[in-house]
Length: 309
Image 1 (cartoon, rainbow, N blue to C red):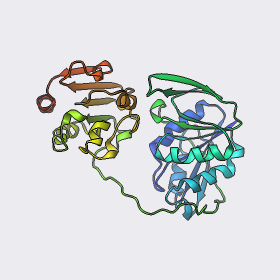
Image 2 (image 1 turned 120 degrees about the vertical axis):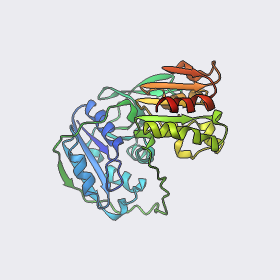
Image 3 (image 1 turned 90 degrees about the horizontal axis):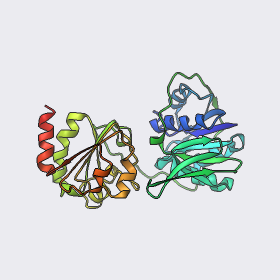
């Protein structure tokens, strides 16, 4: 029994989501291999080789993998799929784009966003916006799985896996890369941040979101938002936390002016400590908060910043 993890990377650096996925693969039992499909991505393969629990890294290095086109990466995974009992990828935009194609071509059911491995064929995953946990058992010969990274600790480093070169599959020709717009920020990346300051509809405007910046600066925090704030155009779409946004589990999460709709809670309720600030004492967010402040956020937040020195 051997599991294959499809690495998420940018050709230079291995994404942290891959480390959480490796942990899930190790828990499924057997050996763990990592597929790095990229262009000039030797540094990524070397980094993957140092992950504890990984016994082999497979490097498919070719120009057609440079931009991570799902059609090409999926075909590379399919070329070696018969060697594996499990194929896993993080439940990020990257993994969610690749694995459904792999599952369809293998004619197996994909098991999505697992948060726990019970055994080699049995997994747990959230349903109904995280209000229930389904236990799923698969009898498919190859289990195709996306991993919710907040459900697993990152694998440690210290491994010494062998790196093996693969013959790259040909370009599928089904898609081509046009352009990429990358949001640049001096703040930590939202899904990897240890502290997150999020605002909701209660912020009232994009201008008012600036009130949260001094707090985020003091704490070296990422900034997030509820879907209501994003839909209202207050902040960019990549700030969205929730069922249809990013799933986060930081050490500390500030929910400011966020009522706590079930879809938002699904994306952040695994945070270690949750602090809610809302003028409505009946707001659902207080049901999951470890600490709650009932008050006007426009008075509370500046005072909190002041107290932090």
